[in-house]
Image 1 (cartoon, rainbow, N blue to C red):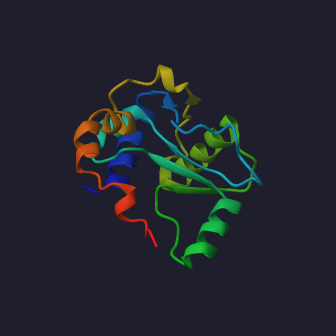
Image 2 (image 1 turned 60 degrees about the vertical axis):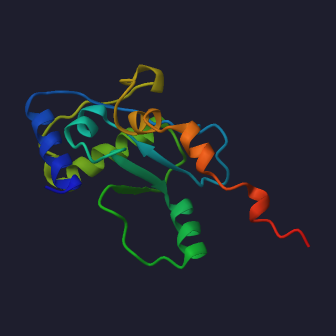
Length: 154
């Protein structure tokens, strides 16, 4: 089963069981410029059920998407987990974007309670956070190539 199929099945179960959709993000969103922003949103219940997922959705402003597509000459459609919005960043906008995604993916008949939680209230070892904590930073640093090896010293 692919990630999106797993997400939808898990969310359908959550809808049937009236489990709230607790979401959060790890990015610092305090310095947004020109309405250009993107945030990876996690839902531990979904991420833990669909083990291959580090995050659940990516919510992207239209301005950020436009700039990215122009810079990288990218004409591909959005990924199934990406949600495009034309609003300034806020937790409410993120929650509404998730609610729309649920409806667009056949889950609109459930009365989901979408709740933004603080990162510190998220389960400490799930999804993206677990992936980060499992990294061996000392090993990565020892395998790293010094920047001076890449810089031309002419």
